[in-house]
Amino acid sequence: MPPKPGVIPLGPLRLGDVLGGAFATVGRYGKQLFGVGAAAYGGAVAVVVTAAAIAYSAVADHMDRILSLGSEESPRTEDWVPLVIAFGSVAVVGLIAVAVSTAMMYTAVPAVLQEAVLGRPATFSAVWRRAWSRMPAVIGTVLLTWLIAMIPLLLAWAGFLAFVIGMVSMDGGSGPVVTILIGILGALATAPLAIWLWVKFSLAPSAVVFENQGPIAAMRRSSLLVRGDWWRIFGITLLAGAMAAVASYLIQIPFSFLGMFSGFVGSVNLGDDPNPASVIVAMSGYVVSMLVGQLISQLVVATFPPLVAGLLYVDRRIRTENLGPVLAEAAAVPPQYSA
Image 1 (cartoon, rainbow, N blue to C red):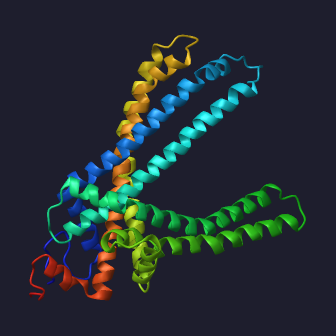
Image 2: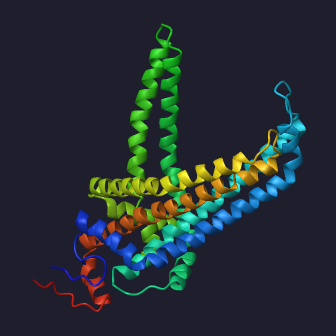
Image 3: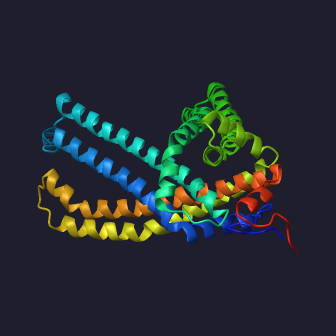
């Protein structure tokens, strides 16, 4: 049997080894993982709430005038345009904040795995510093991967829309039939390509942290490691994502019920013609409950699949580069396998 100084045996990993290693890492290093995640996503929520408060204070008068309009009145351009700009800006800030927080987790997870595989302790401050130092490279890697995979995805969506348009406009003739065929063929041709690219570069964030690689070099490294084992990596990654999605859904259920109860209680005290501020106060319990539930579930989604991806990265290097003895030596474990 290969030695096991940390969360996985230092030999080729089976599915049970990968999933067991991911759960073991969460159990042993949960404080570090969820601490970084809570700080990152909590900071993102604080940024978004602050941006929303600033946006509301800037356009509160415009909102009051729009909400006070009758059913037959139309909002003036000088009222609805500032609202669109303000809350569009909040949406952009939110996207950036979530992207940075997710990149922080994509970096923190491999940083923890570096110690977990060797059975070494990891402190929150050390993980944070390591993750922060590699975060720009991870952001670049994830962005490049997303852009490359999005091209065929957009083509697939275009094909799907062409299919829908063809079905809606089906009134005889060959035009709609051609449109439907183009839509089907476009989706069939481009969606698998996007999935193939996604799996091909799925190990790149781990290569950024484990090997201090830049975005392009990490993507090349991932492509090399995935070669010859695409289907296995695809299946295990898909399973990990499904498990995280189910856990996220189950976590959000009690917070959803709590939020609906809080919203119902708050709305009871509203008058017949409440102002926007009263509505916001009444619904604050619902919003807070949903935010907390989303934050906790996001921690699971942002932790477990990257853990599995990181362990698949280690597994591929063990299989293709004989990394096991090197890791065993680093963990102060004799490199010889014992029976």
